[in-house]
Length: 486
Ligand SMILES: C[S@@+](CC[C@H](N)C(=O)[O-])C[C@H]1O[C@@H](n2cnc3c(N)ncnc32)[C@H](O)[C@@H]1O
Image (cartoon, rainbow, N blue to C red):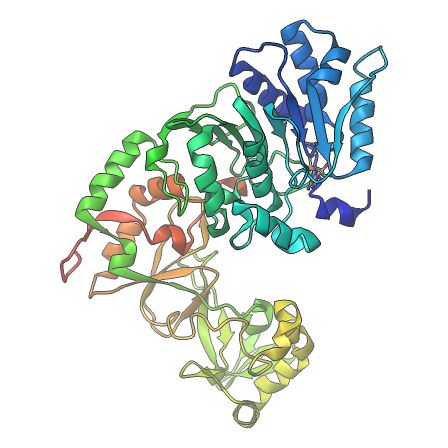
């Protein structure tokens, strides 16, 4: 199968240790009669189907070929994979398998004649923009596909829920982006009343050759009122500690997995104190979309110019800038070429006249600049404009900055009003608040605890400090309706 088709079909194979766990747990969850129908949805080479067949035969004492013929179903859009799965199932039995329950079709549009007791698998991860012709059809047929930047695996969940028997169960390993994303809202609403258990792998990488933040989700057809949740997976499933989470505490805007104890604390804090967005504004930094052209450490300087790579840049076109993601209170000696006046781009003729050296420099880089935004850079107001207009005013002034990702809270006060920043966010109090006191609150253990619980994780233990998470932070120093904050 070629690489493009592989990408379009979201082909990634699941390691056996994960499949083993998923199948063991799903079979453990109920009494097995021996008549169950088990469906591997998006079977690939059949790792789920084969392990399920072996385990099911062992559990029921049934002959493996009988299990394959009667209990195991597998679906894939690719004939090649269906054939491969048949071969792999055949390898489990000395007898010739007389009949395979193979479905060579699009799982989302196949007309299934039966319902299933167990649906297992690793559905394809395909973003909507790569779905090509199927996009509109999916949007029409699937509530989970109806808004925004959805992924094909959303529809696999929805279809699988439709296909369950009364006591049926699902175990899928998928990305976890739908826990937080705006597009995932309908999927969250659909799944919530059916959740049994989530193992959120977070920054732990399950798939060797694909960076994906994944989770195993167990669902059942019958309604549930609470579910088990765990993260911080290290190396095995043995010592995981699960939190019991009540579904009524889950908000559909975003899933936050609060344990009961923390929830009590937050609810109490929320009643008494304000959120960060009520007491402060949070802004993005500058986004040039080509930082190595706009931002530099000068090789040398004189009274009027900075010198870099055989060019010189007029000093009065430059402002000091901080890279928030690496800032540690040390001078980074970084400058930004800032071709703006009063938040407006300096027009070409004036720019050429007043800043001929910087203009020469930008002309030299014109082709690279025009490739920003996948070539959309050609349509910027002036070719030397930043990729985004954010932060042209708000990145200046006194502020508290932080990176978009941190291991623990890292907020710094920046006093110099003429210094801008990028690669992060800034917080500016709405009132005349002492910046250092606010910064202390932002660097408190409470922030670390809050972010750990609500935010997205990345490789290496990093947590997202995105505005969408920061804005709801509550601290006892944020008084609800007082003119002075502290
Ligand atoms: C992430 S891979 C998983 C393969 C296998 N289950 C495993 O875990 O190793 C997803 C599989 O889904 C198949 N697939 C993609 N789109 C599909 C669709 N619409 N209907 C059925 N199968 C699909 C792909 O061909 C691929 O084999």
